[in-house]
Length: 165
Image 1 (cartoon, helix red, strand yellow):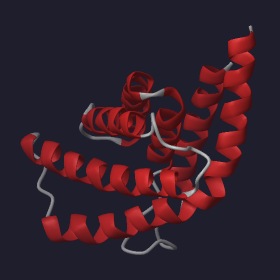
Image 2 (cartoon, rainbow, N blue to C red):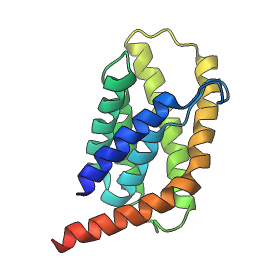
Image 3 (cartoon, rainbow, N blue to C red):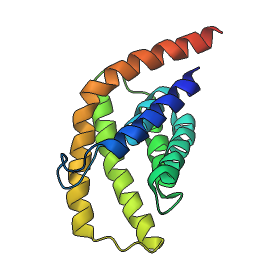
């Protein structure tokens, strides 16, 4: 049931990211809803599930948006693994934990996508990526206080139900 919930939230996040009006955003940046889901899930499930979920969500994002299939999959896989590794021994109920994880994950994801994109032949300018990425990171971090609480309660309940069965 938890995995079905993740699939539904992933699909909703991809839809939100595609319809979020870039004109309302700063520097044509939009929040990375799939990345938020990867980080939140990794905090609950650990590094292995975080990496697998990050890869699958990133692949879905690449298939939905991307020109370079696998770019977001690899970046989100690494972010999911690291967020899951860091969150194993940290008190998840503290709001600063997901904020710091999302901040670090957003920056790492942007850096990895930029580096792998250049290796794949993309001609992105570092200044544009930095400017747009700065606002994307800010959007992501600002959304954490609003989205982490509902995700925390839903995931906690679903995982407890899954353990009981």
